[in-house]
Length: 149
Image (cartoon, rainbow, N blue to C red):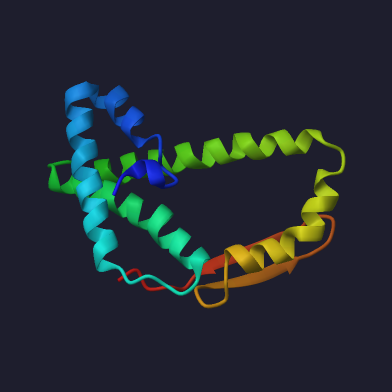
């Protein structure tokens, strides 16, 4: 499987930028192999959203971390590189969402659809969603409860 099909489609570019073309490409190939192996060992859920979380977000990061440790990086180095990739993804999503904040009606729409969106993206079979508030300052806490393996 290829990381281009995950939330980390930018991984190849990040690796070649950080480690050069040859080493970056080699790490990427090994990470794709590890990710494929992890995916083959994981059972698919009947819920598509759970599958998205597992196969497009969690297993790719695990593949990055495990590959780096196997290639002689310390656990701390591997963790920091995986963390950097997670932050890259979060930053990309934040940039996309920032465009919506410029429209005056965005918060009203967000508030109107927040609960249904959370129910769809974080189904009860895999997550516990605890609403702290649902007013002008919506806050919720999401806890992951699925076992990884």
